[in-house]
Image (cartoon, rainbow, N blue to C red; front, side, top):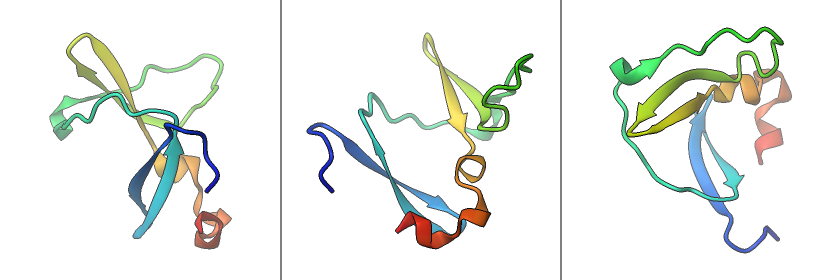
Length: 82
C-alpha cells in the first residue's frame, strides 16, 4: 500500500461490502449502545452536514459517529473501493 509507518486500516461494512479505511491512528475502541447515541447539533454553516450521524459521550470525550454512506455515496460504485 505504500502508506506511512504507523497507519492503521479499519475494516468496515459499507453497502454489504467490507471496505478498508486507512487512518493515522486508533486511540481506543469503544462499544456504544443505540441509547448512547446523541443528536448532532445543527450547523449554521452547513459544513460537513450529513457526514456525522451522531455523537457518543465516553468518559470526558465526545466522539463523532461518521455516516459512511454519506462519505462514500453509492453513485461512486463499489469498484472505487477496490
